[in-house]
Image (cartoon, rainbow, N blue to C red; front, top):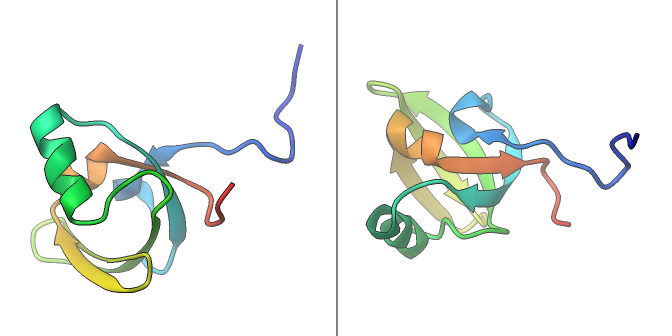
Amino acid sequence: MSSPGIGATSECPLVERPVGSVSVLRRVDAGRVRRRRLAELGFVPGAVIEVLGRGGVDGFLLAVNADTRVAVDAAGARDLWVGDGHRG
């Protein structure tokens, strides 16, 4: 029986993260076309994502790698699975 170690991280969809949280993108759970579009916006595994705010109809304002601001809807945020706020 093994227990989670220090390096273990749990993943959750970005939609579950609160404003102000910083996470690392672990995977994009979407089809090929949508995954490519999200990658063009900077959403690739290892990207650091900060939730800057929520607004509109379930929309999110995100900072990606501290240099890009992107707005996504709740469906997009559900496709982005993140882990804790440091790389590794």
